[in-house]
Image (cartoon, rainbow, N blue to C red; front, side, top):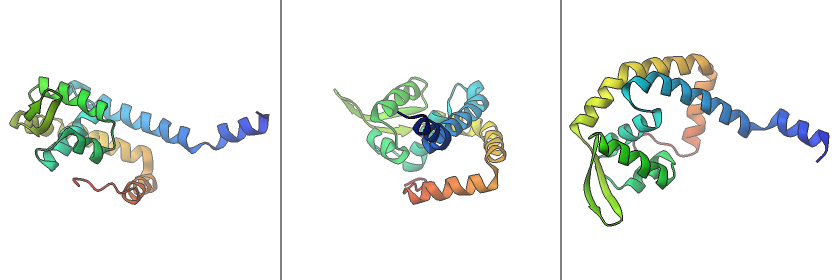
Length: 146
């Protein structure tokens, strides 16, 4: 590989820049939510489940564009806290899950800290960045609550 190829990749790679921004934002939200015993990924999983209603874990993976194993691991943790329940299961695991009243209360309890993290993220990204991210997500088919 020539030096110019290295310089081009290091200087221009969008993927690495997106990953850096993603890690910074995740850290911002996780820091705000850490006192609640949740990560932003788990909060979004709870919220998606609350919006979708009882559904198979595979539906949550699809909506949030996550690996099924990641969803399964997080659902087990949420189940252990009583924030979700398995409304049907079999030998292969949870077939359908639902948000519990305790889970809804948990979402309500994190809301002030989530809102602060949201404001901090908006400041970090700037108005143009926020608009760009929303537009990109919409173009990729992300429809909240779908």
